[in-house]
Length: 178
Image: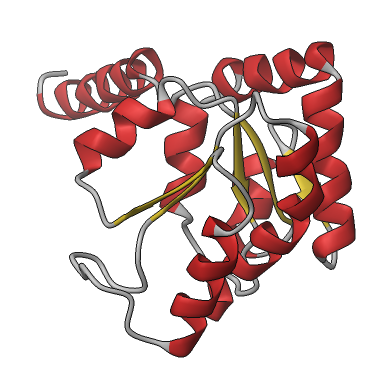
């Protein structure tokens, strides 16, 4: 789907793939969950262009959530170049929960979710996305800083949720048993 900005990612990594053969680049997903084949001309073109970039690219298509989570545990950088105002971008949330450095469009729910935790790009395009990805690849300290920010600032961890649940229980108990 054009609104997800996959074409921007492919355009942005065109030179990066060749200059960094030790890095692996993946695209995961399809236009619709469960879809096994590329259907639109847009999808076919983006994936064809992506696969032609080099041997260090891999199109995964639609895969199970467990498989996605396994991949994210070894992912260094996640790119979410969304062109629409997604109110709750699950891809970014999954990246945060796995301590992945995230580069994304500064729009929709991405802004709230990633402020202080990821690189947000205003008016995202091929060039500024390429620059952000290259900065992470060439600067390991910066990459580690954002990986740590991703996890340290993850507000949906089990500890936070448990404290929130305990607070609700105390409110309920105090209102009924005081």
